[in-house]
Figure 1: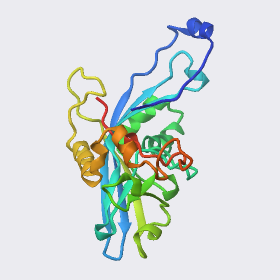
Figure 2 (figure 1 turned 90 degrees about the vertical axis):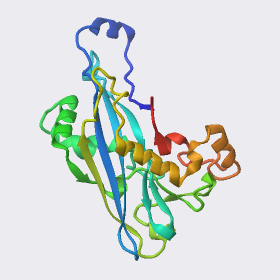
Figure 3 (figure 1 turned 135 degrees about the vertical axis):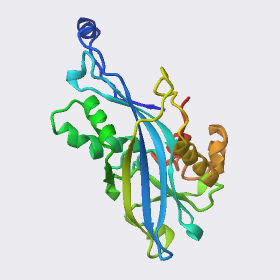
Figure 4 (figure 1 turned 180 degrees about the vertical axis):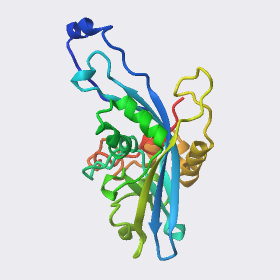
Length: 257
C-alpha cells in the first residue's frame, strides 16, 4: 500500500517549473522491529522484518515542502506470551494515542533526524541511515497500535492495548521492557528490478507467515472479515464504529506485488 503526502500547486506554476529539477530516485531499506516483554515467566521477545520503499517529492515544487512517499511490505510484529496470549504491534497508528505513528513513520524521527541536523537533504540522509544501520530504542508513547485477541480465530474479540499498561490485559507483572528499531541495510535486488520487485527476503516471508499463523482469518477476503466483525465495536459504518479501531488487512499485513 502506498502511503503518501500531497503537495498542491497551481498548474501554471507546475508548468513553469517543469524540467527545472528532477525528483530524487527512491530508496529501499530493510528494518527489524523487536519488542521485549517482561512477564512473571521470564522475558518474551517478538520481532518482524519489513521492507520500506521511500520516495521523495523533491522535484520542481520541493522547496515548498517536499512530501515523502512510503510503500511497506511486511506484517505486524507478534510477541508470543504463552498461555497469556499474543501481543501484536500493528503496521498502523493507534488513533486514540497522540504521537502514535504508522510503522513507516518511525524511520525519519528516530533514525534520519540526526542526519538532517547536519543540513543533509532527506534522500542523502536516508542513504546515510542505510549505510550506518543504526539500532535505536523507541519510546512506548511512539509505538504504533498494539492489539490482542481474546480469541485469535475471531477478529471481533480484538482489544486495543495501552503500551504502558500491558498488565491490564495480560495480568500482573507483564510490561514492555524495551522496543528496538534496527535498520538492516538494502534488500537484495535483481539486476534492473523495480524497488517493489526485489528478491524474496526470508525474514519478511517468515514474519508474514508468523502473523498468518496467529490470526488465520487474515487470509480471508475483506468482505468475509467485515461479516465476522458485524455487530461488534469493530464494525465500520455503525453507531458502534470508532475511528481507527476497525479491522483492515492493511493494519496487519502488507504484501504489494
